[in-house]
Image 1: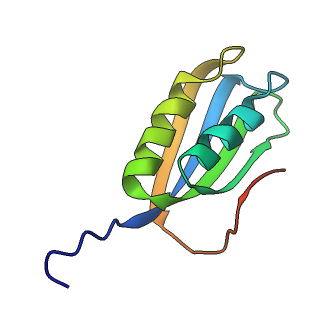
Image 2 (image 1 turned 90 degrees about the vertical axis):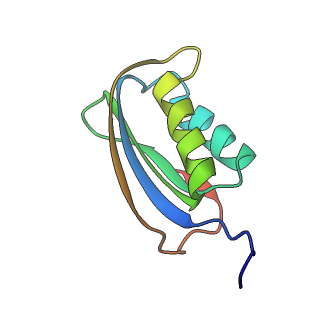
Amino acid sequence: MVGENVQETARLRVLVMGRVQGVSFRYYARRQALGLGLVGWARNLRDGATVEVVAEGPRPALAHFLQLLQAGSRRASVAQVEVEWSEAEGKFQSFQIS
């Protein structure tokens, strides 16, 4: 419809590297995602230094979420972030920690 304010939904996949395991970074990511109305998941990777985060929702909320992930939680130290944007798949109901 003309004039209707429809926010584009998208999918964001982020690899957050640094001191992000063992410092509650996944819980930080979940708290921030829920506050922004996002769905998806966060999990530690086996390398011991990377957290993978996948989130879906309105693109502006995802962009803000990405900024929060890049800044990191109080106890974390983010050294590097890899970002991948794609179309939302609509498979998530909430934000989970794996």
